[in-house]
Image 1 (tube, rainbow, N blue to C red):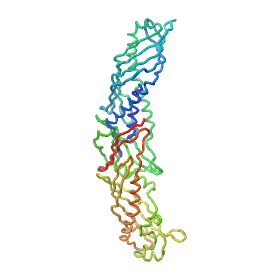
Image 2 (cartoon, rainbow, N blue to C red):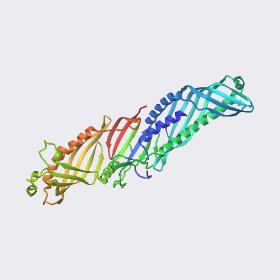
Image 3 (cartoon, rainbow, N blue to C red):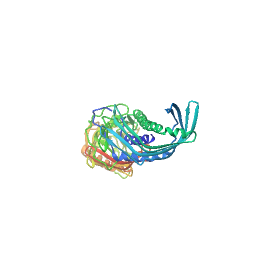
Image 4 (cartoon, rainbow, N blue to C red):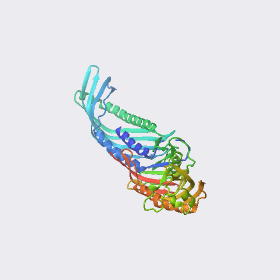
Length: 476
């Protein structure tokens, strides 16, 4: 019984790495594929742990009544495991979204005390139960229950094919005459008890799953909806879980203007897990941060490295806008950058492109520290980038592709946008892009999930899709 619990718990842990909880009929923003290799790894862990723990497991006392020349009340107490082995077991995906676990030739030796009451007679002694061939096959159906995955007890077939029972002490010589009836009773009860315990285990796991959260707040701005949006798709070597995969503004759950497109994960049997993050998922994040007002920042002169000759001072405007330089002589400036609409990311094989749309409000800082608005520029910046996994960190690089400026508002006359594009391009190349790349080079550590961590993950950019393939490591 403990074997079932431990195998299922390990399998469910792997399933929950890529699953949780949605609206039916929508294309997913994320898909998670758990392969046969993952199930085999889960089985190995579970069997190893079970073999260690079962040897120290004390079975509960049993009691009941049996008809042997009259009704005999019996109690079995003080049971302990003398030896245990599971030489053969298998786990795999089967049709109709099911997972099957089977074990054969299980052997287990149990010792303990027996007590009987027969009329006025009270008797007892010790016993040895040597199970030499216990076999069982358990089937679990994986489905969708509203926004959450569901497990249901589908089938169980167990048999006790070969075992020996010996009684010692008391009047065991008398009860030995009825061992065949006692063995038949054990042969009938043991498989029923095994299947009953298996059903109870599935029930407990299902209760646990139904209590899972359907979203997680990632930071003060956004949260991730990781609902199931359809039935799990089971093949002979994998199960694919369709996950909504949309990021929302924490304060206001507004649907993003993007539409999730259908996609297929690449066929992989070499890894335990494949995770697909679509353009929809990435762009919903940009929209969520934009809606939350997080995409804004200020640029001041003290942020510019000393080796860059262009300073945020009105004196730099003298060749381009001499009237401004004269009206606000030798004053520091401040630029307030705010996203004018959500950024758009496109994923293509081997790289990504991103377009950011920003309003740049330029101010002169007066001697009394108040601000005098000069003009507002519309800025469209396009970057190329690569993203990859190195040393268990998500890292990347970006390159500035182009910058376009447009005058949106001016309180100081016409704006020479062409010349300012050149200045801005230099500033971005020398200041902003290096800072972004330094941050990306440092990388973001891939988190572990309890005792489960990723092993040798690989990230690839495909058409409209980021694909992570990885094995899994369980730390006991």
